[in-house]
Amino acid sequence: MGKTYLLRALVEQQGGFYFGATAATETESLRQFAAALADHVGSPVPFAFATWDDAISYLFGLASPRSSQAPLLVVIDEFPYLAKTAPELPSIIQREVDRFQVEQSRMRLLLCGSAMSVMGGLLASTAPLRGRAQLELVVRPFGYRAAAEFWGVADDPALAARLHAVVGGTPAYRRQFLADDVPTRLEEFDDWIGRTVLSPFSPLFREARYLLAEEADIRDTALYHSVLAAVAQGNSTRGGIAGYIGRKSVDISHPLHVLEDSHLLAREADIFRAGKSQYRITEPLINFYEAVMRPAWARLESGQAREVWAQSAERFAAQVAGPHFETVCREYILGPGRALLRSSLGEVGGGVVTDPVARRQTQIDVAVVEPGSGGSKQAVHLLGEAKWGTVMGLSHLERLARAREVLTARGMDTSHCQLACFSAAGFSDSLRREVSRGAQGEDGVLLIGLDELYGGAFRAPLH
Image (cartoon, rainbow, N blue to C red):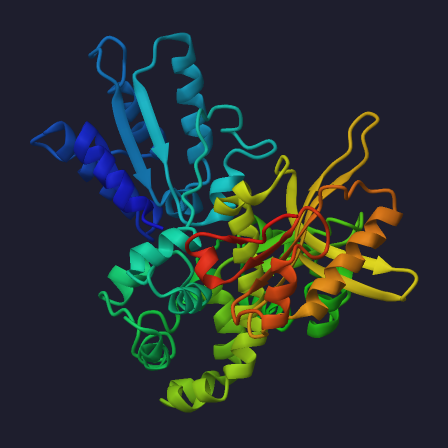
């Protein structure tokens, strides 16, 4: 995500000490740290610390209030490497932080790492550093609009959407991994996929595996890949995942929690059914790997990228682009699409509306619901359906209107509930005509395609 880039730029601008840890033994890491620290203070003689206790005590000593009035910026990057070989490090840092609470501290210590589960654990529960941090910052990938600008494809929404469904918003993939090899138009996308993500000679080819392997809490990678594959195949509930991999639901609790802590899986509550939830892979490249690459890994390693990709069109649409498009639509409502709502934002999510009369369930991909409080009822402000490869028509709008009726019958306030059709493939002429006449309620209907997601938004006139 560019964490190291940002930290180096900060140290360069503000001055201070930067140390980037590597995968090494405790003795070698301590030697590297001592050498970097000696270079920082300009010592002609290399430092030699016997323990991390000595090293951290010396480091905090540089920030003594008596030494200077200027703050001392210290950045320790890839901290999980150090904590793995020296588990006592957080406790040592905690001791020094607590000691300096008595005096005026000049220390500005930034600990950084890529292993999300390790970094999150530093401040959790009974961890030594809990309560000592003044800032906890997760450097997240670009949103879909910013990613389109970064890749230079913002003027081609169809290409931008496909590109983001594969590589997401990780900035390093364009520059460091692909050396600015970017498709410039939609017609180039298939060839680009073959020579980059699906090529065994590309750094991106095994990146999804490396992302999983770098998490310290993940040891049985086969089990975790199976869990992710289950989700990528559409088994998004706990029971569905367990059934796919041949385990009991209770047996997959730990891997699910680890993947959540690692920010590789997200558990999203059903906005209409209490106690129900679904899992979603948060990293697009991992989802693409599990859905498209892993089932054909041997063929891809033998150089059959073109053939594999040609046979993956349906799988890509159903398991990669489709679910990703739903996520993008929710992100749109949370961001630029918020202005379309005639009420407060509330909670944005998805869920299932069960129709007891017709005995069927309607999947709502994008919903905005405001919880009731006091004497007010729970209010539904938006019901939306998202389709990647389907031209949406009147039947989709009618299904949303019926879901609104069902929620009204359940006692929810739908008096200002708008209906929204999201489609990457467009809308039928009959739907556009019906919407233009102000159909399906006085609050209007939203038709949102790729152009609107990446630009403005079409709103039906109200009558």
